[in-house]
Amino acid sequence: TQTTRPQRMLAAVQKNATRGDPRSVVKAIDQFCRQKEWAMNVGDEKGCILDSVVTEVNPETVLELGTYCGYSTVRIASLLPPQAKLITLEFNPGNAAIARQVIAWAGLEDKVELVEGASGDFIPKMKEMFGIKTFDLVFLDHWKDRYLPDTKLMEECGLLRKGSILLADNVICPGTPDYLEYIRNSPRYKSQFFKSHLEYTKVEDGLEKSIFLG
Ligand SMILES: C[S@@+](CC[C@H](N)C(=O)[O-])C[C@H]1O[C@@H](n2cnc3c(N)ncnc32)[C@H](O)[C@@H]1O
Ligand SMILES: O=C(c1ccccc1)c1ccc(O)c(O)c1[N+](=O)[O-]
Ligand SMILES: [Mg+2]
Image 1 (tube, rainbow, N blue to C red):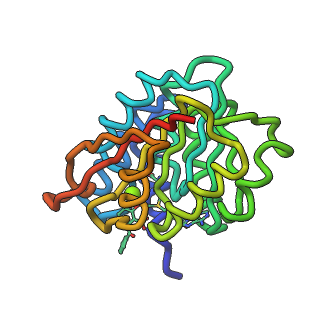
Image 2 (cartoon, helix red, strand yellow):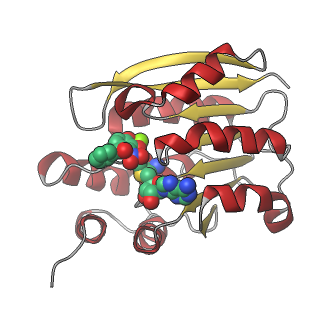
């Protein structure tokens, strides 16, 4: 019977990566996506920009919207300080099942809380479920038409504090025009664009980093 792309990606991790070594997991997935099958992980070029933002922010609390197979989850979690927590939301059960195994292979399950469900349903529950007051860093990488509504929802739920950082993938390709228009024109945010390329391709893309001003 036919396997799914996430299942084939996990097999590549289990074959080529070393248990407990996050960098080898990232490398195995990037090699799979370059040599075998394109997949919508943030990838290595944008991943390096993600790494630099995570390192700079040094967050205690991180929210990731869109887990897929856990590639960016592993990149982020491997850079977090000891007590820090990364909550990642994924509403596709098949993807969530694979991501759990990829995160476990990297040995990062203690730093990651994978919630299987839709961002719109779970963002309002973050405080009660995890005792989270606010997020220091949010990585937006789910369906692109959800970036703006979920950002407004996080504002309304008081999940952002003065200095919280939003980092949004794909603001060029596939593009998030309504989110960009909002975040770049709002007096409540200061934004910066990081030019890059769509993962594993030469197509133009980039990340938008925005600081919530309170
Ligand atoms: C581009 S993939 C995430 C890639 C991942 N961040 C990485 O770089 O490895 C987008 C994922 O978001 C999930 N997704 C889309 N909309 C969602 C939502 N509203 N709530 C939760 N998950 C969502 C999809 O099922 C898909 O697995
Ligand atoms: O939307 C797509 C997409 C559209 C069409 C076909 C495949 C993927 C996509 C492409 C690159 C991304 O980095 C990404 O996060 C996504 N996504 O689904 O969220
Ligand atoms: Mg993306």
